[in-house]
Amino acid sequence: MSDVQVYEDCLRKFGETCGQLGDRVESILLYGSIARGEVRPGRSDVLDAVVVLYDEALQDERQFYDSLEVLIAACEDVLATNLPFHPFHYFSKTESRRAYWAHFLPVWRSDRHSRVLAGNDIRPYIRSVDSDRQFTRATFFSCRRSIQRMSEFLTGEPLTQDASRLALHAVGWFLKAVPKYACLVCGIEEEYPETLTSLAALFPDLEACRFEALKAQLQEETADLEPAEVLLMVRNVLGLYEELHDSVVAWLRMNGEWDRLRGNSTPVTVDQTRSANP
Amino acid sequence: MEALCGDAGGCFRLGCDWRPLLLTQVLGIQYNAWNSRAGSGMIRSLISFPLPFFRDGLLVVMDDDTTDLLPAVLAGNAQRSVGLEVVSLRMSELWELALPDPFKAETFSMPYWIRESGRVVYGEDLRSLVPTSVDTKRLLPNHLEISTYLVRNSLILDCLTKRRYIRLLEGLVHQGNLLMMTALLTRDIWRVYPTTVRAQFVEVFSDGDLQENLALFEENAMRLRGDPTRKELATRLVWLHEEFVRHLWRHSG
Image (tube, rainbow over all chains, first blue to last red; front, side, top):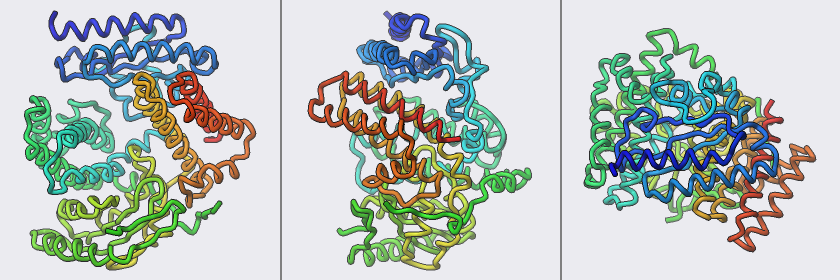
C-alpha cells in the first residue's frame, strides 16, 4: 500500500464514522493539502476538516452527547493511524453562517484549497461576525507581539529536541499566517502559498524570495535540521517580520490606506474608562 | 533572581534586586550593542507592567529613527528568559498596543495595565500615550468566535480523545475566565485577576441562567476532580461550557 493510500484509507474511515451522525450533518469539508491533492506522506496532517452539524445536534443536550461521541470516535480512528494529526473542527449550521473566524475564510471559500467530502456545499454561505473583518485586517500589526515572543527560542542555549520541534512549528505558522495578514491588510484575500507570490508583487524591494527559501527549508526533512539551523530560521523570521512590517506601513501610506486603517483603530483614552475592584 | 512579579492577589511589586540587573542587561551590554549597529536608534522608554492573565511585561519604546527594530527585539531575550513578556516598538507605533492579538487573549487588557499600573524604569513617562482598545464592545463577539474555533478542536476533541479529562477541565476553566475577562472589558472593567474574575463577572452579569450555568460547572468540576477518570463528567463540562458561550453571545450585542 502506498503512503498516499494510507491517507486515503484514513479519510474513507473518517467519512464512514461520521456517517453515524446521519441527518445531523449538514456538510463535511476538507481543506489543506488533502483537499488540494498535495499530500506529502508523513508530513501532511491527515485531516484538515470541518464538520458542520445542524443546530439541534449541538444545542439539544441529548443530541449533543451523541454527536460528541461520534466525533471522538472519528478522532480515535485517525489517531490510531499514527499519521500527523490534529483534531478537526466542528460547528453548528448557524455558527458557520455568522461566526466563523475570518482568518480561515480564504481557505474555506476557495475551490483550490477546500472541497466537500459529504453533504451540502456550504462554502459560499460561511461568514464571520460583522466586526471580524476589521479585526482580522489589523491582525498583521497585533500579531507582531506573538512573533516577538518567538525570540524566546534565542536564549543562547542549545535547543532541545522538543524546543526545536516547537520552534519549527512556530516558523511554519509564521509562513502560513503572516503573509496572509500582510496581503489582507493591503486588501488582498489570498491563501498560502499564493500569498508568497502576492507579497513578491506587492513589495518588490522586500526580497520575498526569502519567504520562498523558508518554505523550501520547511519542506525538507526538518528532523535532520541541526538546532543551530533552526535557530537561524527563527532569527530570519523575526527579521523578516520587521522588514515586512515597515514595507506594509510604507505601502499603506503610499496608497492612502494608512489613515483609514488608523482611523478604524483610533484608540480611546483611559479617562473614558474605569476600573472596578471586587 | 527575584524578578518583576505580580502575586496571586494581583499586587505588582518590584523586587529589590531586579532593577540593577535589568538596567545592566538592557541599558548596559545590550544598549551598547544596539547603538553600535548602524541605523539603530535610542531607547526612549522602558515601562514594566503587570499582566495578571499571562505574565508581567516590559514595554521597550525606541525612537522613531530606529531603522531596524530587530536588535531591540533580540535585546529583550534576557528578560524573556526570566519569564517576562517583552514588547518592542517605536514611538510612533504605540497605537498598535490597542489592537488585540487574537492569538493571545490573555493580553487583551494589556494597554490598560501599562497605562494604569505600569512603572517607568528608564526614560520618558509615555504611559499616558498608550492607547486602549478601540471598541471593547466589538471584542467580545470576536473573542467568542476565535475561542469557539480554537477550543473545540485543540482542547475539547484533543483531550477527550486522549482521555485527559483534568487537562480538559483546566483548559475550559482558563478559557471561561478569559471570556469573562473580555466580557468585563466590554463594561470598561479591566482590573481583573484570575483569582477574582469569576466574582467580578457574577456581580456584573446578574443573569440568572448564566449564574446557574456557572454553579453547575463548578459542581461538576469538583466531582471530576474527585474522580478524574469519569468521561461522562468531562462531556457534561463541555456541554456546560458550550451553554456558557451561548449565554455570552446573547450579552455580546
